[in-house]
Length: 176
Image (cartoon, rainbow, N blue to C red; front, side, top):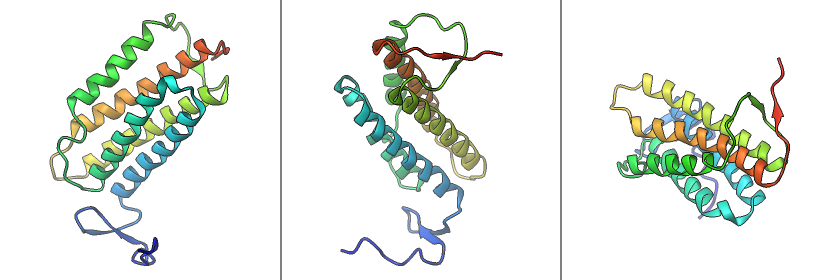
């Protein structure tokens, strides 16, 4: 099987349901951003110690599921309320080990911490794209997917703080 099909040479591609759409379609922007985020998570996974490997691998698989859903694949159980709860549990466990935040922080401190913040900002962009996509759809939306993405961005934020704390990296505080 060849990797190239030539079916997209004129600027169109197929969704999971076979429908042909322009490569500028909102669905492609959304699942392309999910794919981009998955790549950033892969980089973060390569940069962190193995203590986060299971969580990051799970997130990568869920991002692939999300991308398929955004490409109009059918899979009602691919992102669930239990998945949202799982991330909330991770956030709560990490936050229990952190000092309360008293100021805004700037991304950076180390490549790993900065990569967490890149994951966070790409996740926020994905969320905005999904909101726009769902606003323009006549079909039923997937609110659980939006909840999952929203929690995921919070996870990246607390993970960045936790890694900075564990690695004794100074964080940058925002100064007015």
